[in-house]
Image 1 (cartoon, rainbow, N blue to C red):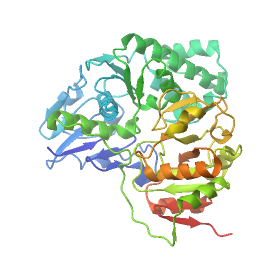
Image 2 (image 1 turned 90 degrees about the vertical axis):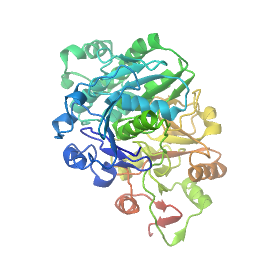
Image 3 (image 1 turned 120 degrees about the vertical axis):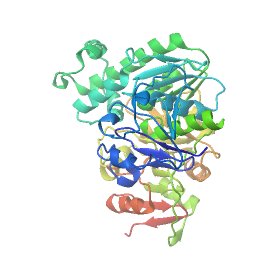
Length: 467
């Protein structure tokens, strides 16, 4: 049966047809656009194919569709594979979608699953054991709501928790703050003017780890764990899981930007008896012909010489992390590179860190962790002092481990840089400047022209600035 999937959120609009993951913000150039929801979805409910979807409470205030009836609104699953199939509609819960995407993508035969975010239709957080039973932890773990509230009142905006997480490394734990945050479920708000925001962020990070472990670990049913939902972007929390689980998997589009993937996978599994695993790089492939052919060795040497490179290759990544196809790359040995990129290219807060993309067979020589992190999902301690450009103020880094199978051209570039410098990694951050990650060659060229990037590589061609 042919399936088309849409993510009915109030933000992070996306669709999926089994091949192409359309993340709308990449084309609209507006992050988390709340105003286009009804326009975006009104044409996707048709008789031409099965439409797989879920809802959030927020989305209902934006979507007006007569096909969304009481059966859908009252649906609440008890097992991972529960579903509602009516005519050409296939409906599952928001958190089921997160869980399905993570579990089926992991390749694990059995796994615990944690789906945790701010809000969905029925849940804020669920745990699913190896027998696929759903355990509602919404009352116990309202972590996503707290992060979003603090990020908004701190001036980082709606869905700005990632900025707050970066700031947390600059703060100190505070016992009285901890007690206030523990009571957030009752008081619902915090007067931000009374607090040191850095210390509040640091304390919130510790509370997150404490509370998640408190409620998760007694439910543990096997040695594998899959994690998804917006809170799954919390790399400190994900690294903590590796102390208790042999294998921890976080998919690349773990937030609501991956919802369409989860809907599709659930429907395909149930109706077609098929395990569909989306490509990590599921965007469109663009043709581009330039004047100067790419030399991997030359680009690696330019990076070693201090140049900052916009790296645009093939199909774009799903999710909010640049994984080597829409990346800004630089030398991690440069102690000033973070400030340079934040000020002249990303044009964002100076406390925001950057990630190392490290050859997989070298990661344990530089980072204190026990398993690879292919999707930049865990924040781990740094073991050496010669990569200050990717070492956060607390001595950690959000690593991406890279092997040849994942991304051969990116692997080859890092390997060439290693041969030039003796350091088997590059600084890697998303290719953007105060807007969503670039999707097209034209967007890449525009960002190249308006920032202080030194070199732009598009597929097999490179562009350099004059002078």
